[in-house]
Amino acid sequence: MNPTRLLAGPPIAAGAESLADHRLRVGARPRATRPGELAASIERSGLLGRGGAAFPAARKWSAVAGRSAGDAVVLVNGAEGEPLSAKDRTLMNARPHLVLDGAELAAEAVGADRIVLYVGADHANSVVALRRAIGERGREMVVPIEVVVSPATYVAGEESAAVQYVNGGEARPTGVPPRPFERGVDGRPTLVQNVETLAHVALIARYGDAWYRELGSGPTRGSALVTVGGDVAHPGVTEIAYGTTVRDLLSVAGGTVDKWSRGAVLLGGYFGGWLRAEEAANQPLDPRSCRDAGSAFGCGVVHVLPPARCGVVATARILDYMAGQSAAQCGPCVFGLRAIADATARIASAGSAHSDDLAHIVRWSGQLAGRGACKHPDGAVGLLRSALRTFSDEFDRHQRRGACIEAELQGRVA
Amino acid sequence: MAGDDAVTIAIDRIACDGRGVCAELLPELIELDDWGYPIIAPGSVPPHLVEHAKRAVTYCPVLAFKLRATQGAESRAAAGVRQPSVARQVG
Figure 1 (spheres, rainbow over the protein chains, first blue to last red):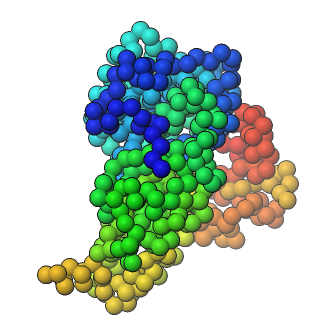
Figure 2 (cartoon, rainbow over the protein chains, first blue to last red):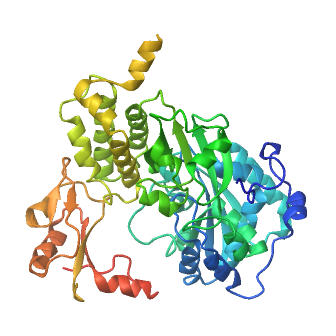
Figure 3 (cartoon, chains in turn brown, red):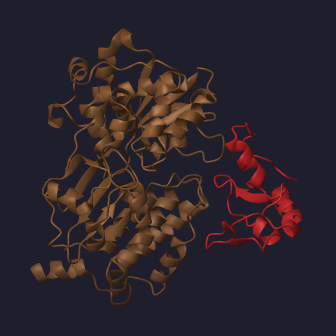
């Protein structure tokens, strides 16, 4: 059930695949024989962006291509600021030439003469691997490629923040038009695309869109990288066919559904949503199915909360992080997220909740979405709403009785 | 269905610093959250309130309150026609 496409080849732990090995294994990067050929193939493939928003890659490409006079920019997004995700750095570390192939193919397709690799400062190994890979390509590169090391913050990977940083500003979202595809890096139309998305492009260009669609069940076809973590024996990055259920994924990762009577799973990371274990077990992992379930596929995080851990406490920690990672530009995010995080922290800390804390966070959770320059507040309140639904009993116990499962279990052990 | 002149309120959330003038001028469509920042009723501005909405554009002290063409702008953008960045500022 674990397809190996992006992660086929030598073991991940062996480090970066060399250019020579990469070409021996998958062949040289194909070149388009007709203009628009690859873009049409990407459209037929149904490839979705892997940064979290699952936006169709083909639509981004046509928006940039339609505005480019041959001077567009491809901004390859490897910021990976999501704390529970490791799939982008894994890909950059182990398969840098898939990423570079995809970036060059995209540049050719949209009419770009510059490629910027935007890599998170905390992914030092990725920066090294990509720089070395660029060096291996030497004069063969069709378009100049540079590496820009981005700040290690949550919002630095947001499209407009990335563009603003590359342009010499701060890595904070700009929100208002123009959007990057209109005026991005150096004022030019800019394709901002996640590293995994581009690695898929490298394979679709070689094997075709029909091949790409052979994997997957349900509404979304193809394969995806996921990061499995929390209460599993073998945490880490793996590749799945879209539509794989959480149960099947966890059986491979060494997690079991049997001990989940009180457990829960966080899908999609800090921008995602909680599901109760019994809901999650048969949940297909693909963007639409996860959204329909009130959760999110996001950047492919599947994080198992151990049964002895309290979902309210876990949620409070995440919200505190998210409030701290606000770009501090928009009032509803600055004040709203901080208030939500503080109230949730009081609820989580058994016995210290104010009488109206739970009522407040329920009300605020419905007020913040759509009221920031970026989706940071939307992501945080989406996570909170999923927590209020998934851990409704626990929130109630905390607020009314100051009782916490986690504290009780730890107390019993001690 | 919204007519050609229908407008939608758009707040520049980075510029907005919660003075609350818009909520005073347009209480029918705007309430303030617990920190004084506007929450906008969804949809287009009803025709009888458009004049009030234009006053909010004029009187917002930080020029964060804007009006955009509701329907036309989206369909023109979808057709690939370039638009000025803030589609149409009325008032």
